[in-house]
Length: 349
Image 1 (cartoon, rainbow, N blue to C red):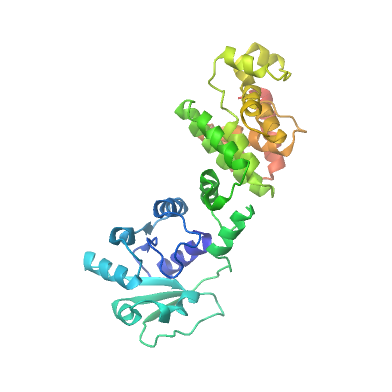
Image 2: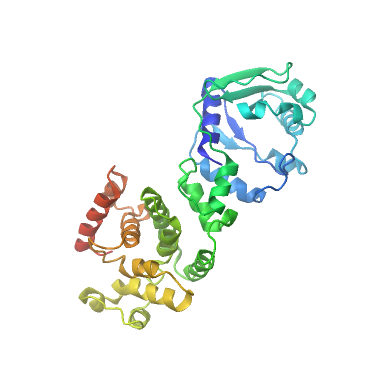
């Protein structure tokens, strides 16, 4: 699911004055069986994420309910039977229009429904089916495709502006399309196992901060996987006892500052960093440093440390208006981080 799908849906919704647009996830693909496809519920969840809070657009599970091969004529027939008071249109891109003659029972389909075809300006395609009723909508579309995006993810290329950032985070989190690769896949699995032992509110903070961290990494043109691992791990020992934190934090000889010695909870970063070193084979030193130093970043901190510290401080889950304003303001990341450093001087948490 990428932004071009949304552009097509919104163009049809507005230009054709539709009541609603329904996305219909394929249950069992016919033209491209099994090629790079996730399970139905996995694809549905990605779709739900991409469509969040978008008025007039929803998901229809008719093909899952019907089961078996997903033939469009059967889908339209079932919808007409269930919703006899509705008029349905089939929304497709101009490239799909060329493929209509290959669709099963196409003669029946063109009698069942009318088509809304979204064309790129200057690339209008002639309908190969004379009897099809076509409503054309122009929309400025990019040449992106789901196939290209999947291939990029499998090659660990994550600078994909046509992919919604929340969708990308979900893909990373679940290692869809083998996008993480080893050792990140194993590292994340171990971090999630440990994270499951901390209080639910702290888990939500780590997940929420990770959304920001991944976005900041992409903004800076960096691989988001180190930011994913580091931010998911940064507060693993935030709720641990003082004795556990001190035992861990001193285990690798990390130098603690006066505040951390006086208030051991402030050493939860070094404690988590030691846990990473003890439990994650060959863990990247940059990830360890970012987790260790996120509570007390400095102006010359490495980029990954800056990302984790900024995401942690500005996490919307905290619901702190002054920090929300910094997060939401339009500014370069370097300026945002500089403000976080000043905030941390006043309050390290």
